[in-house]
Image (cartoon, rainbow, N blue to C red; front, side, top):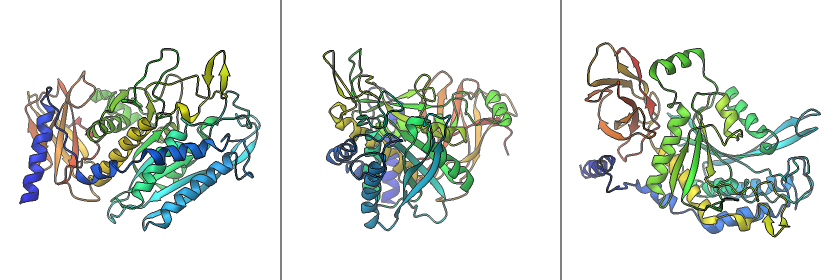
Length: 454
């Protein structure tokens, strides 16, 4: 009885915050909060420093030198993960080698590259869900074909690698109900090659992927040129109309005006809500495009195969650092050195990742077949859904509501059962439903679409 009372007290505080503007009461689940506080700045800095020491991680650089090149970087990552795995009952490490390139490609010749994956096996026997974090470890200089120039890649993408490595350290000692895969990818700088390889394996082997989160350049907090700076804001990029949309998906999207409600966009909103709940002094900025203007990242191959995927990236980019050969030219410092990485910013962004995947892993699976009754005209809305078929049974559900011109869900109502009627017009609002457990961990949202009540 005491636990139920505590849950409803926390729930009341959370729901109250949805209707208030003067106050925002943060209710944090204890296990997630304690894990977030374990993220260490010194550990992050050490990983980045060790990667920078490899001189370059260019995809065409040496693999036979133990001190320099992409081979040395891959070995560094593998050894560190193996250290964590040795003390863990649920963590294992795999190396995936693949052939890439050719005469008419950006690599210029065919080579073998390596992806390294830390598998944190889920403890639930009734749930096969998988959550994936991505970070590429290769680097390059201004000349994409120069495999010997100093290309430290401290931020691009030592910052992302350090975030995933820190998460591996923390989660190696605490199993979660669902499987987490931390992917350290090669080939990004020459066409997202490593990500494409892993996405194809995921499809061929039928992985039940809930979310893919790509961390690429999450450590710079000062822009070049405009000299704007902040380590309190992080971008999340998400696709609108899915790359993998089928004719039937298009029909449903157009009927429901759901061009702003792809599964990737629901994931982006989820990251914003959870990150801002658990990480102090961090705001998530939702960028409604797949990636930066005209560019792409390792999440894109997963998007193209139909997986819900987003990119996390610093808000301010510094083009005097990215892909620049280090040095002083015309009185200006260039190069992607560790001196340009804001370690505390990487720490907060690591915490955002950890809070998101832990909350998602501890939550029930999301509901399915969320349907709005359109059999009659009414000023209220009847919504029904099916409970998840696998994993833990939800304690209840949140009904999410927002006006059609709003970016984020504005209100949450807790309900029991698998249907409800609410006094909000389906003409003026969008709706979704989340599963929630007794501790308040909520699933991703399933967007409500029009149909007859079953």
